[in-house]
Length: 140
Image (cartoon, rainbow, N blue to C red; front, side, top):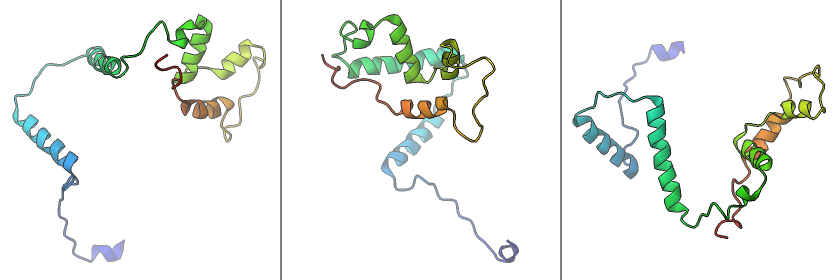
């Protein structure tokens, strides 16, 4: 590092978006937006979440016009099985708690070694990569 301190260096700022069409457009739109009147209104987290959720819901409906709630195989399953599938899809299952309830683990069982990922962590990694809907069921 010391040899570098004895040398002269020049820095030149270059925009990283240079020459990339999508980024050039984003820069142009950002510049136009910065020239417009800015709102001073504040929005709560819940309000923003509601609006974003609505936008994605409408987009999903537009892309999935053939979807039928009644034909969805998920809704033909018993509620308990629906809950299990939902938890597995979203990583909200507690494997150790479930094993304890099913009496596979005792209340004083030792936690897994910190160096080895728990079964829960390994399952979560593999389950997160599974497809979320069956292509054969879409459009039936």
